[in-house]
Length: 131
Image 1 (cartoon, rainbow, N blue to C red):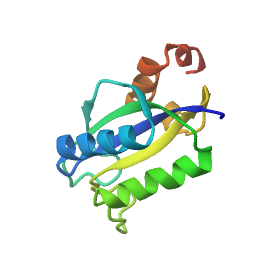
Image 2: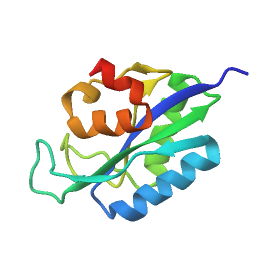
Image 3: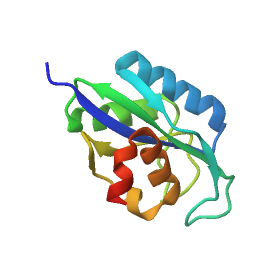
């Protein structure tokens, strides 16, 4: 069986500690959790009239392909109470995105958001050469 390694960025600003813990538990139940970065508070981007976010990343090993993991993460977001509003960068219970797939950066947030890059490089130090 082919196993894939992914870095998943995690963010929340609605009861973040509880929702990140629930996301960690769901991920660990469905995939092998290999590690997690430090979590940091960040100011909202775009829509500013909302609480600060807590952001970090998880390193997972999964038998799913990238599209399957993407679907799985969106299902987890729904289970954890994420509701899509009309505000692109609005408040959210949880946000889970694949940033690195088998060593390849696949999300531009790696380059555009320092806290995402720092979390990914903490989990996979070899990525520091790509930033």
